[in-house]
Length: 80
Image (cartoon, rainbow, N blue to C red):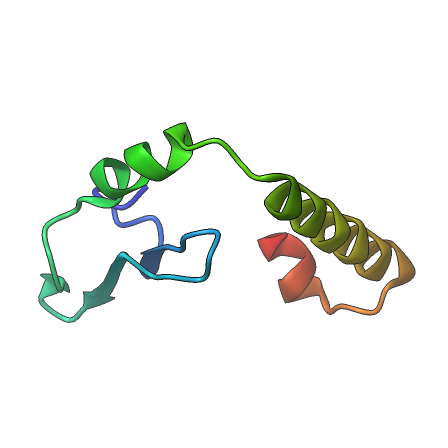
């Protein structure tokens, strides 16, 4: 997705709210060489704690309720 320029911006966000990677499409191409996949691999391998699982499930349920109730616009629904 990043290398093919299918998204204007690609970010990798850690579960503990860190942002180890952020790359954006500018007039001359990407700010940095595409590396989101390399940045994601270690984080994807890490086990989730019970708190992280619970927080994710609550967030997912909340997002699902908002989308189904029509509380978000069309653009936001497409992003979800």
